[in-house]
Image 1 (tube, one colour):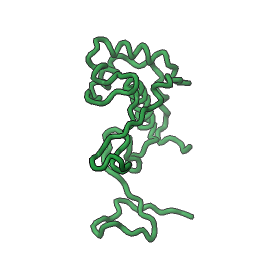
Image 2: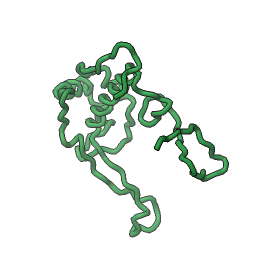
Image 3: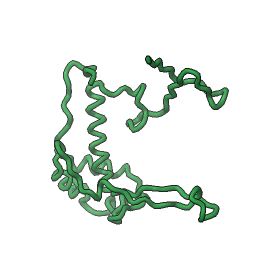
Image 4: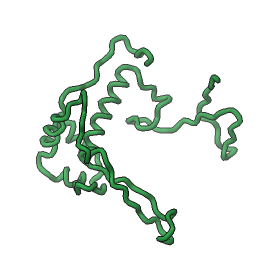
Length: 164
């Protein structure tokens, strides 16, 4: 692993997840998302009083050094949604994965902490990493030699030199 770009490394936040951070994150989740097999949606979690306190207690029972989340949080129910047209043709369906809202909250809290750790220690270069990074928009294309663009209007956003 390359050396951090900062002089002093900030450790990963292993503190307990607070009701306040859970409440803030829950507010940002869409209320109209479909529930998983447990039938609990963000809508339900937002409407229940003291949900954030309950979830903070629940999440504190999962050690961050060796997390073993419930298996229900780590699985998905795949459902096919009909897009239109002939229902006997598989191409007219798109799959969606229904996962646990509670599991998604836990994973988002961990991902947020990981992103903060990487940023604080200079280990995340948002000029290169665009996907799954908070407040980072855009994409980067890395054209390879002899690559043809789909349109004459497409130009490389950034070139990358590969050594063979």
